[in-house]
Length: 88
Image 1: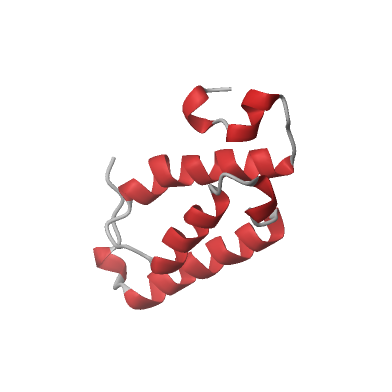
Image 2: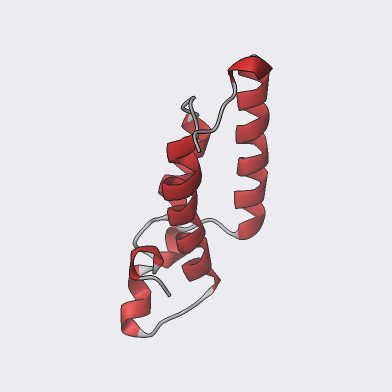
């Protein structure tokens, strides 16, 4: 994998679903969150939990999906449609 997206435990040859959660968190942070015009505290908290150093402290995928869904619903409800923009 790409070093910037690899979970810390990969260096010790330990791999689990939590490692994928970490990588997804980094992708969200670098590729999605930075492109969003509005800040969403729920999304920031989710990314922080997904990128914890200790894999046991990362959420499972079901929780990630629920939080992502709710973060985007919150964003749509609080921002008029004409103001929602993604930077290209």
